[in-house]
Image (cartoon, rainbow, N blue to C red; front, side, top):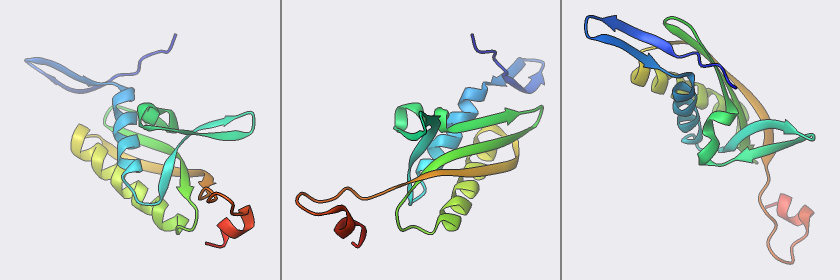
Length: 135
């Protein structure tokens, strides 16, 4: 059973506001896949092969460490072939930082991007793999 580390945002006379780590993970995942050049999120290596996850499992490619008022994020991504990886990673960092700070009020101290793989274009019918890579 997974332990919950919900973060208390505000304690007021009306009660407290708590945001679950899973919510922060989903926000980060959504902000990441909005970046052009991101093929998907990686759930890690299972049997040595990166698994590309769809929109239903966005939090699987994201790890969060949430403190009292701050958070650090680790993103595990798959990029499209041919993109400038540093530019895509920087845009991911910017999108995630902005989305989390605007939606939760947390201060994002780190967004670490781990590029786990590259998605190649599928070969057209009858085309060899080497011809597809030259497109």
